[in-house]
Image 1 (spheres, helix red, strand yellow):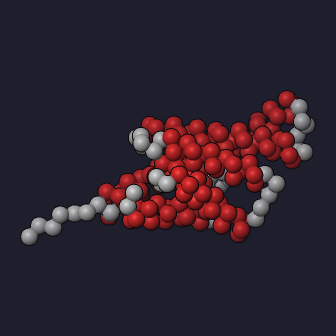
Image 2 (cartoon, rainbow, N blue to C red; image 1 turned 45 degrees about the horizontal axis):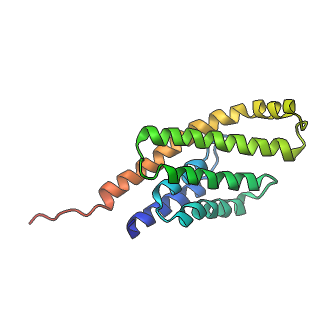
Image 3 (cartoon, one colour; image 1 turned 180 degrees about the horizontal axis):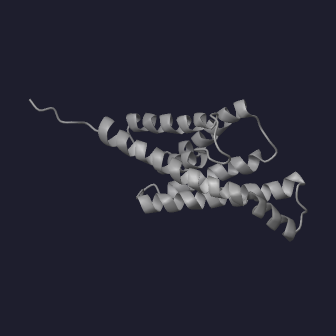
Length: 172
């Protein structure tokens, strides 16, 4: 991967994290798409896994921390791993499927953690079901937002790498 492509990817990754600081509807942020994008575009695996975490940490320094941070950060790493799986096949249907799978994974892990750690729900099967049902409106927003931000990040990257970063022949 060329330096220009790496810098282009970095700008999109940290731009997505910065966008988290802007006002937005509940669960409509570019974070899942950013982690998927990092995994799918950065060929150095350590960077693909660590950059989304660094971007999250920087935005969390402003937004604050909470009890479920471990689950959130762990989910981000798993989403970046999904990105690594689609690195060689970044077609629209594959990316859309990876985005939805990432949304569902994030939803399952973080809401399980809320159920387990928060004390808001009884620690029973019924309490877990109640927790997931209460979170369904956030899932809808998350899936739609993740699909939209995935399209924006991968679309912007495709445009950048095709038009700006591609060497062009000079005709004389």
